[in-house]
Length: 99
Image 1 (cartoon, one colour):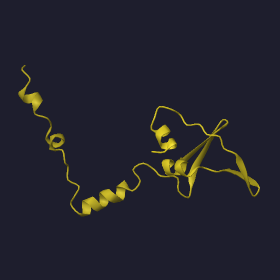
Image 2 (tube, one colour):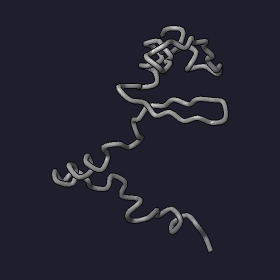
Image 3 (tube, one colour):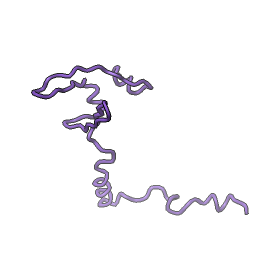
Image 4 (cartoon, helix red, strand yellow):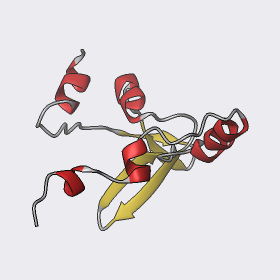
């Protein structure tokens, strides 16, 4: 585990200093490869400005592709409920309680 990964897995906040570089009429920030990999950045990122802070996050959405995966499971007959207790309800309350 390299330094960035180790720090991200700990209770410490990693603060890095970066230099703005000229890109045409704009400016950019170079991100180290381990940071790009850790954040899951690909070709595009989402940016948000809050007061004087810039938040950059991956475009990947949680549960992205789940609807298609569930549809394929249904087509294959592999979407059966695994927990039968949820379907029939627990029996301990009928057997173990004395009224």
